[in-house]
Image (spheres, each protein chain N blue to C red):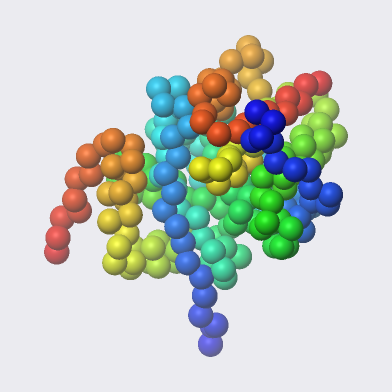
Length: 145
Length: 88
């Protein structure tokens, strides 16, 4: 796993910082990235399956498409991990009573995607059944009250 | 006079947990289009449409001559059969 782990980013890419700076929006029962909330689709279970699927979809970010700096383009994995960790910290401070899972997935064969969703009270309903389900690298930050 | 929007879009397919979570096909925008439509717009497999896509973006996306090829390719990646759109 060590060789899959991206090098650490010294400073989070400006494009990713912009997403965090916009913050979050609570729309009904859902916590969404504020940038995505105005154009978020309806929570149709026919498309998203359940609430975890909806939040995980609306709150997903393709890191390679968001970075605006050379460093970000050169090492998107590091910025994906840095964004995921910063996102987890911001969720924890914004919603101290709520549990979230933050996922960063990607690697040599896949682009990097970071997403979050509230963790279900029962402990199930995760975005991925387990990290064994994916071929490349994955990080999950568990935000727990 | 309104300045033209410059940008593009992609049709993405995602199936991270087969059997656990439904696969999605969704559209992302770039450039000026991303400023106007920053989120993702999801394909409804039942209605075979993007139900939440704003009309302005829908006109752009559906005017793209290779849209059906992109959707058919997404279905192929999901090992599903694409039913061609009826021709006019």
